[in-house]
Image (tube, rainbow, N blue to C red):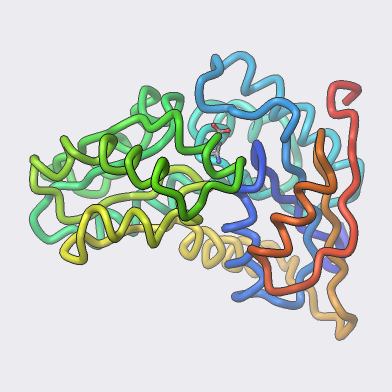
Length: 269
Ligand code: DGL
């Protein structure tokens, strides 16, 4: 495997771009191939079997593009499919949950952590397992927030409806007196300002993206896969539907210009 090969990153939609942004910040010399499964979103309410099938198809697509490592920039797929698919491929693959759990465990002072995420991620119990493996004393309170992903995908980032939904979803967590709140879905960092305003400055928000990019850098080093070429990175973006809409969003999130996004028939993989 050539160290000049790109890194494959995927999510159900635009959420994974919050991870891409961090990767571009921390390892700017790496080329990225991004896939957003916009035709089949949301992932959060689907069964484990379906998410494993989708993940396998996306991995086949990304591996066909010659990626050297894959980042599952989706908490739901990290929670429901990563353990299964990682035994099926011969390149490194990492998710966002383990890195996020580590930061959360390191951040809390009063031992009460809230997790907001999709139904799939919350009901998998994966954040509880990872956090309690690090510190068994910590109490974890999960809250599924199924409406937040569609609101983000509709571009309602700074909107009274979104603020109201965040208020409803976080109400119980605030009564429990959590001091740390994990943004356990890669779409949620796009709502960071709204969420912080609703929960108050006394609660620390954890975005797993930073730690994921740091972990990716480590994996590249360990496998001698860091791109040492001086050529400008070449990023490519693919979706399963709505390429133009995605391109517009991507340009509001990333600092590099996304010139083109291509549609892919992911069902054929
Ligand atoms: N952004 C994804 C996650 O982190 C998936 C959201 C969804 O499609 O429901 O879980």
